[in-house]
Structure formats: structure tokens, C-alpha cells
Length: 202
Length: 368
Image 1: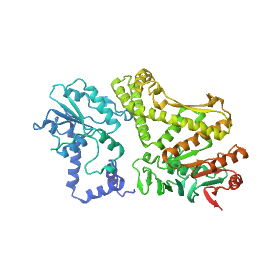
Image 2: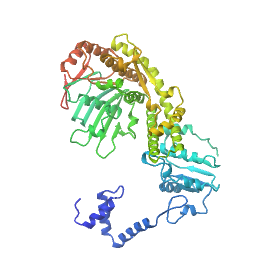
Image 3: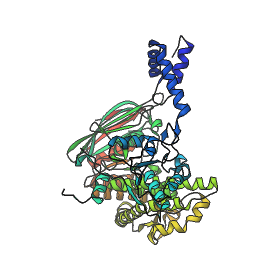
Image 4: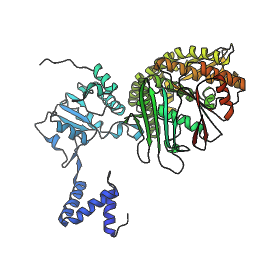
């Protein structure tokens, strides 16, 4: 791409350094900003600077947070006897959106995958153990991806927690809502049959 | 099952080529380096979703172009099946069955059973255990979709375990708890692989011995034994026992990924005691036994691809072999030969219905 302006070129380079933004998209964004009032760009830039300067990790659950402790951990109305263990903040948002969970979270920061250079020490497992020390937690829900790495992580954590009087559960795996049986893959369907649940008449 | 039509675009040395095949015998003749093997590999690719020779998709693309396309029209159990493979730069390869792309290429394996015999297959007998496991896995994957899934799962966990062992070595600190978890995760797929392999060889061994007697016309006995550490001991115990060794060598030293097949002729190791001719007959028998077992299990005749099998055989043996192929219960067969008149003469003499093709530098001519 040939730019008539060095300024535009620099801005395009900056935008296109972001994931899933190509040169053409970057140029469109830049031209859009030029067209709008200067304040729009200032606000945009300030939002980014503010974010980077002030974003913190919650000291308790490791979720991204504006304060030392995040709003979920602070919230007195939430059930403090249950922790949902997830990989990252996007999982927290997805589960929050369901409106079906009122407990606390713990963000691991990934799953165990030595191929990617991630061992148990790279994850927030020790802090999870510390959170269980005062005996207030009764249950841990493992909400990790149903992959081999997810399984490894669940096994590993449950081994670390052996001996504690805490219920460990995993989210159910099986046929999705609105999905038709004949389109479910064999592995999922097979698992769903093996881990079938009693039918409740109420 | 048969392949009716094949359309190649930028596949190896084929720029654009459309071919219509005979439902029985197809003879493909041409000089060395003209593209006979590439044509067979294209058919194999359509059946298995990858090259038999382990060639990278990028290297299959014709010189100085950047994509290839392969379109194959099959008839399977009286239904038309069209398979399309598209490999483009910077995109994931696409494999479509009747216009629907597969989510995973591995799901395609087994739909269109195929057996290929190439001159280098003698390596199955002479090389290390890896080539024999590949033969075993290739056959079982075509028979049993679940086997392939288990194999992929096993290999994935194994890779993670080996990466973990390597990390322990780099950090000079092992995490026995993590290792134990990988051991536990390997157990189920590992034992399943072992059971399925053992059950398969129990059936395959006698079939191989039978086929060898027919091929060689001699009275020698051949056998094929499955060798696995899991036969005598529990996989879990083996993994625990090998833990120290694994930590030192930084890889998993025991398990189904170390299995082997032991080929014998007259009770002696084939590798060391077979003559060139016996070796060739053995490999041919191995592949034809693979054909019989596949045919029985899949309840349809696989496609048979024979690359240059007449090489180094005298005319009498070639005649014997062609008679065997024509009289045998085979479906569609593809044979390549460098000798233009040799095959056509023998085939015409035998009276078998066939179609002949002449290949020159990536262009194909049907011969009437």
C-alpha cells in the first residue's frame, strides 16, 4: 500500500498490528477517525491509555478488574461457598450471561499443555488452594473446555485437592439444546448415554 | 465400489486432466517420470485424504502454481459419491463429500477402502517398527473409525506427556503428580489400541499365510506375530515401572507406540533370511491379505492400486500374477507399467475387459 501521508501510514500500521485486523480494515478505521471530530479520536486514545494504565488482576480470583478486588468477589449477595474454575475472562462473561450462576470464580489463565509451554506452575492453582484453606468453600465447579488438555487440568487440580472436604463437579457434557440427536457426533452422543441422568418427574 | 471419473488440477505434474476409468482393469503405461505414480497417489488421496508417500500438500501443488484441486467421482454401494480436495495458500485444506466439507479430514478415512502396492513397500519388512505400525494403523483405521479416533487421542496425550517430560528435564524438576495424570489418561486409549490390534492380527495372520501360499506357489510358511509390551503386563504397571527411565530419556519409552509386527518365513526372521523374490512375494501377500480383510469387513471391494509391480519379474511370473488378479475376486484395479506392449499383450491374451492409458509428461491418452 502506498500512502500519501506518513501520519496515516503510522496509524494504519498501529491498527493492523491488532489481531484479525488487516491493512485494508485498518485504513478504513483510520479514515473514519479522520472524518469524525478530533474529540472522538482523543476519547478513543484516552480509553486505551486508561485501560492499559489502570487494569488490574483481582487479587482473589485473577479476573481483570478496575480495583484490587473485582466486583464479583466484592459482591456480598453472591454465594461464597462455591467457586467456578475457568480458563479466562471470556468464560466468566459467558457464564455470567446465562444468569444461572451466583457463586464466585477462579481464573486459571489457561489449561495444562506442556506443548505450549504451560505447566501447572504457569496456572493460578496455588492461589486456588489458598482460597480453600478457611473451609468456607463447599463446592468447586470445573468449567473447562472438553479437550484432552481440559481433562488433564481437571484431573490435576482434583488430585491437588484430595483430602479436602469439598465437592468437585464438572459442567455436564452432551447433546446441546435445540440440537437434533441424529446430528450429534458419535463421541458426544456416546458420552451422553454413558453419563445419562435420572429423569425428574416434576 | 469404483472410481468412474477423476479430474486433476495442478496435482503434481498434471496441469489439468480429466480421466474416465473402467470398472475393472485399468492399465496405465508410460516412461519413467511421466506421472504414473502421481496418478495412483491422486486416487489414494481421494480415498484417504492424504498422500500415500507422506508428501506435504504444499509439495503436491504443481511447480510454479499455488493451489491444487482433486475431484473424484465414485460409485459406492450403488450410490454416487463425489469427493473434492482443495488446497489453497494460507487456507486450511478442504475435503468435501458430496459438496459438504468434513470438519475433520480423519472422518473421511474408511468411506472408500483402498489398498496400494508400490515398489518401496519392501521397506515394511526391512525398516524399523514405525513402517509396520503405519501399515497396521492404516488398515485398522479404514476398518474402524473408532480405532482412528482412539489413535489420534492416544498420540495427542503422548505428545503432551513427552513435552512435559522434556520440560521437567529443562527445569531439572519433575512433577510426579502431572506425570501420573498423563499415565492415567493414556491407559484407556492405549489398552483399546492394544486390544484392537491383537484382535486384528489374530484374523490377519492366517489370511496372510494363505495368500502367501497362493502367490508364491510354494510350500513355505509365513507368519505374522503381534509384539507388544501390553500383551503380558498391564499398561499402568508398565508406565509406572518405566517412569525413571522416561524421566532420564525425556520421552515415553513404553506403550502401543512401540508395538511391532514380527514377520517370519519358515519360522525364521523374514528380514534376515528371505531372498529378494521371497521378500517381494511376501509384501504382495501382505497387501493382498489387507485387501481381503478390508473387503470382508467393509462388505465392498476396495480399490486396488498397483504401482510398477512387474518390475524385475520375468514374463512367466507377470502372466501368473495377472491371471491371479483377473481370476481373483477383485473389484476395480489400476496397474502401472513402463513397458507399453508388455501389459497390453498379456492382458489382451487373457481376454479380460480393460481400459489402457498412455501417459506422457502429465497428459493422458486413452488407448482404444
